[in-house]
Image: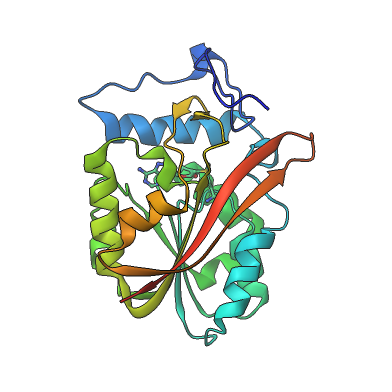
Length: 237
Ligand SMILES: C[S@@+](CC[C@H](N)C(=O)[O-])C[C@H]1O[C@@H](n2cnc3c(N)ncnc32)[C@H](O)[C@@H]1O
């Protein structure tokens, strides 16, 4: 697998949309443009073909299982997209789940898949790099982010995200943070990503969180393409 992409196309996440279909991201209007960008991806690509799509989110489920959370625990799925993790959490009778994403198109697809069960989820459309609705979120017991934080390549966006994370996870609560690892592609869906190892993530979070566990995991897509991740579990101090 190539660890970089010279074309600026969809390499790294297996999501190729034509250049003409991709909205231009300008510096001044990045939030709305970013929303349109992700909405377009979820409109033109069958979500099951996206490079991050997992039929069974095995590693996230294993980490959640070991936490032995109450079924009433407050859980937020960050940049949920069309993740099947929400389906599994409902199946396991978790009662207080929120799902947030910048893309309403993604969340609509997820709602459609869940049918009536979608009413059990608190849906929040917001930008993690410029949060508004998320500022009103009650602190959670578990924050789950797979394949989202690595898109924030600018330090100011990382800091905004990390401030929100520190505010919105209760003391003793947990964070599952999974990003591309150092062997991962340098782009995903045509956007640059920042790749991490354990120390890099620990350094980012250590002011407010203890690292409990971390491991590397390479997800193999049905096509055989590989996506090397690092999974980390943190506990709020
Ligand atoms: C690679 S997908 C991962 C989706 C899901 N977490 C999963 O593992 O299947 C990244 C997701 O992050 C969302 N996203 C990207 N930038 C965002 C931002 N600034 N605020 C909120 N969500 C964002 C995208 O819309 C997309 O659904």
